[in-house]
Image (cartoon, rainbow, N blue to C red; front, side):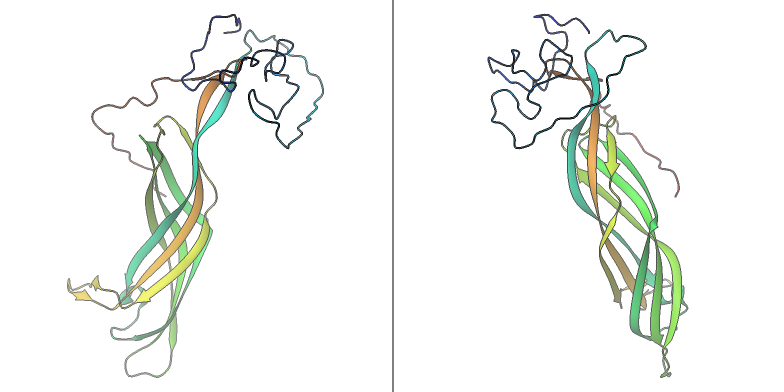
Length: 252
């Protein structure tokens, strides 16, 4: 791979950064004949106008203990990146808070613990699947039937969340990175129906919902040659069998 002549050693499915500009491999090329990756116009590509940035990074010269036999590099290419919302929610009967049936709910306070989030993320063809739990402390202030004195009971538990995000071009062997979760909204709704301990539907329950935001980035390892041509490390990474696999994720 280190000998680049007029024949293309690496056939790129994604093309070159220089397209078909006649001056692409001349003195204005990103990769000229004097250095593996040295270029005079770091923010300029063939056939495009100058960028406003002026990148002039300098580093001390280094000598490699063993000379490389290739002027290709292995890089992580971004398949896609998007910001998404995930919803964690659960419905709790009054008995979970030791609240007598028929009580009046005065207030519900939900405190999430972002440091206590556990999540399992995997990629299937064109999708990112995410399943996890977020720790919460739920405090409910209520007035029991026949009483005029409010009481507050607290429950520490986990809210489950799951989401699948469309990512066209993503393959199972790609890597996925998720930014830390940010809470966008917290909601509590008393009076929702739930199946009670006797098997009958009752409205003595509270729905708790948390909306989370994160940024998902999918990357893929590719090889870049000295002319900007790109080829995949594994050109069969997106081939799938006819039978979908079952993914058993680790317990939180």
